Length: 214
Image (cartoon, rainbow, N blue to C red):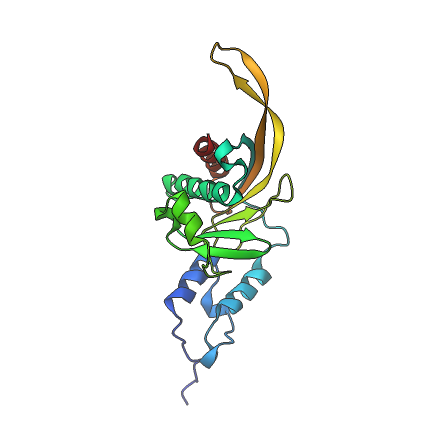
């Protein structure tokens, strides 16, 4: 008598890619889709079961930077400029990052191919884009707190949180070489990178963001 073998399911390229990115073995996942196919919700459930209670990020860094006057009162423009700088920093390190998500009030708007956009173009695209789609990099709009840390979700390379813009004292060097204390609009940003990335990437991302704002 010939032994019966379980049917082999042909999963979509997107599901296979997600499983690879999230470190899930498709053969170990019980599919709840049509004909037993694995869905993205099945992958998320498998990832949650396999993940430790407190996953460690590849690296976490924070920086307080002066916000240029052109961005101090324009939150959307500030977030778009920061997002473009984050994508550029990751790509310089060879990290594949094209899809960007912006989380505002628990809703994440996602823009694909964001690495090809300027800050102004990204800002325009963020209006009316699909919510809660997978993304490589997520920027969290933490406008109501001074600082916030968010850990990457499965598949994400980095999460950067932009805190509230506050008036603060900054140290500046004058034209004659003297040091002066001045009141400037400042913002605290934190970044957490995925476990598979070198710890130094988080600091490099923030350095690039600070240079872009300056």
